[in-house]
Image (cartoon, rainbow over all chains, first blue to last red; front, side):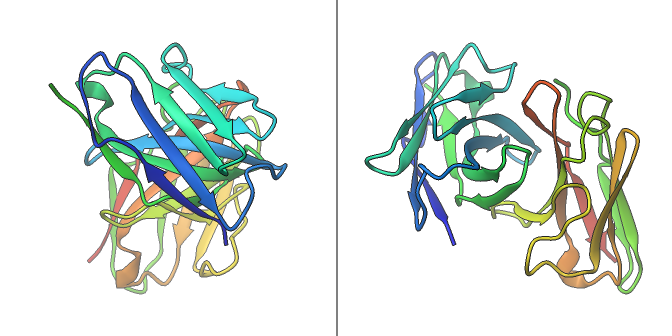
Length: 120
Length: 110
């Protein structure tokens, strides 16, 4: 069973870049058929899809975040990453990484989530 | 893209059945059979319960079922149990090759 674990700073200052890494265990991110995803959840509220990246490096982003988001792969470390620039307090959320089977919103494996707070 | 529409809350008594709706548009829910449902307990990551409208992953109780009609998908939980009390979210693949989630529904078992 694939396992995912998010890591990164829990506190980011406004206007700076939020950077998170997801480490994948028991499974390779080089496997075709899976899309490596980032999803966030505002405190006490719903889920928002940020985007995903395929093992080829192709990326798909939420249109509302597209201008600020970059995702990448590090196959040597079996990791993928999220960069979100120009953050504001509105970006405060729990950030999850997840594996989507086929890219069709089948998020069958999730990390435990990491809270990122944007504050001076 | 706009979030899919779910009722904020539903409730039911043990043993009863409840249905949660998820309404989208012809660009998401209505476009493909790529609707999924997730169960989330407080402080935990969501868990996949239904995918491709009506398929259950291995290990998910057959008390959970999904369906779709037009632009609205539905999750039905039969034989309601106390452990089913959680938040439920739908998601859909879209014609723009993106994913959209619903706003979530809080299920209370009375």
